[in-house]
Image 1 (tube, rainbow, N blue to C red):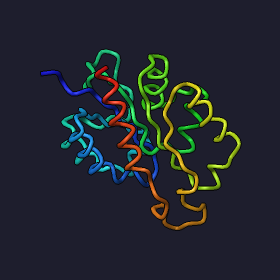
Image 2 (tube, helix red, strand yellow):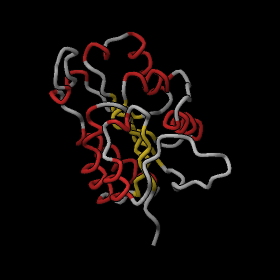
Image 3 (cartoon, one colour):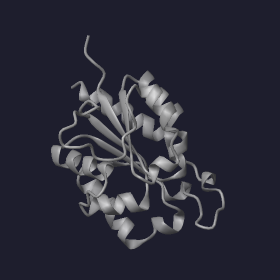
Image 4 (cartoon, helix red, strand yellow):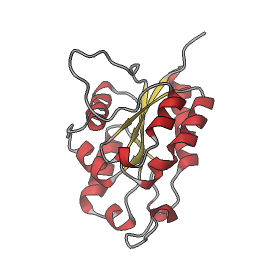
Length: 182
């Protein structure tokens, strides 16, 4: 029996990251082995103990020492959930100052499937650099699940008032998984 493909979920510092545990459970049901890697800001939103228990792997947020073995299996695909304004812009400019960005930049170079769900507020989504960064990522073959009409307003005290695209993201990941078997 073939092993399940490995999906790295890259969690950035946005409110939807707090909702990852049930999403990860659905990904397991879809046949993924899931590993979570967080940006330093992403760790503030995560229940790392719950995610580690669910996935069977530690949640990583920093580079390992060169002589340490990898604790995560190699990734077959990546999902950036949520992709913040900061991460999208740094990634599109090739910055690798965090483990998460380093892995994403390597994934682009290796041609791995990547699905990103950006989650800035509605004002940041209109920023010219962000618009260019989204276009750049798409040009590189990254699947970007993004509808500016669903984003929260910048003055919203509750960022959860936007509608994060969990269903569309899962649909894209199912399609990606199906193509990995081709």
